Image 1 (tube, rainbow, N blue to C red):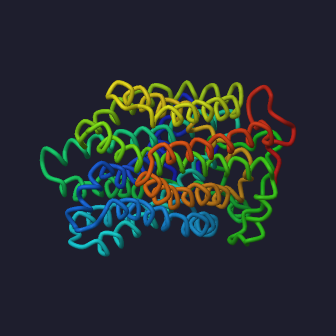
Image 2: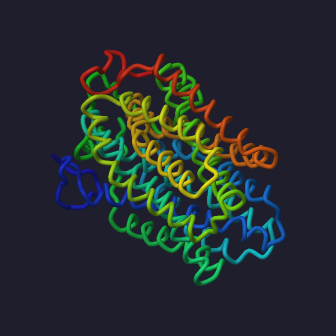
Image 3: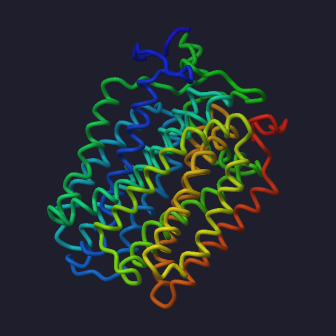
Length: 434
């Protein structure tokens, strides 16, 4: 098979894919996410040093999500117009620059501005990277591949705060901010040197370029004309697919829990109720990352063999159970149990929704499909820190129970209304164009 223009000549991995291409894309996702996550345990003290309150911590998280919210869909559409490669490279390097600059902030408005710019470039990098993975995979190996990528994404999201908390206590609170952007810049340079273009379009076929290696349309997977632009009518068409809409609702619930509970509510709960500082909390995040990492590939195999819903629905119910237990975890042992249960449940099902989005988005609309999905998620990421930290000022019980009720509603809706797109019980309509 002819390689796409600019493809690197490297060996294929166990999934039949170009190992270096997958590694570059995964590296971009992981390091751009790490640039923001490594400083999460330090935000309360850093904001206090700049003269802000606890509510400003929620605002700092929300400003990052707000930038991603308004950028996801345009970034996906841009990647259909000019290709995945330039958008991914610009996103990674942009995150790196503004991540490191955030450590130099002397006032809250400047810090917020840097966080906003990080969110903007993060949306470019992560949304387009997911679309690129979907480009080079099929329905038969997409679950494992996207589970590896999204799993590494989530593992770093758990482990990076641990590293940042420890370094911040030992060396200085600003050091993790200064260093946060360096890995993203380095992986952006790697992508500049070695990442091929993965987008396919009717124009590329006319020019004689073959589909990216490793890609073949799955059963019932309609190939859309890959013209240079995408209209807002395409957004309405994707959302008219009930299964696609419901996985976006699942994404909203997962991001709501991750941003509002894991990144905002739990650090405050740990500090005020359990008396755990950033360093010890960082150790909890590190342990959870190891557990999560061990689950990633087996979960992807289950997703490809038995279906996406087999992971999404039970995983969602386990998250709900952990959230309900959390406000009663008044001792260190109970806190540790709740923490591991919550992050283990997220690891069990975390990669399957990404594969589901890839299954239900035709090739010509994948950039837009992932943009819509992540827009739902980042809307939750913008709302949840402010809402849950606000509730926490009066009652931790209200905050955790609200998150549990929302997650339960999304999980039940998906269980009842979405069709299976992979595995032995795949519905006939699952992979069809919306």
